[in-house]
Length: 117
Image (cartoon, rainbow, N blue to C red; front, side):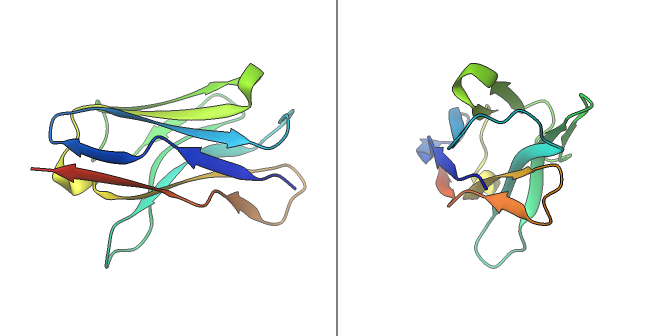
């Protein structure tokens, strides 16, 4: 079991930046995958960025070159740096983690990001 808590969302003008944080409730020694999804009103949840235990990093085409996912093992925290934000980036952003031997994906509670034009 692990709890994830996101922070860093807010209101920003188009072209601005935000950094989202996702803090785990305990030290994560091993994981299969960690990342971020987002869900805009009336839309399905979509994958934004993820990295795996084998070192691969994946981004949605819509955020490539603008968003960057990173982690700080000492702080048990994953970050999503979002630059050059666009109004279409407006959504609730959720972090998640897939743990070895776990049958479920663990999610944070979500943080709202609103980009004004």
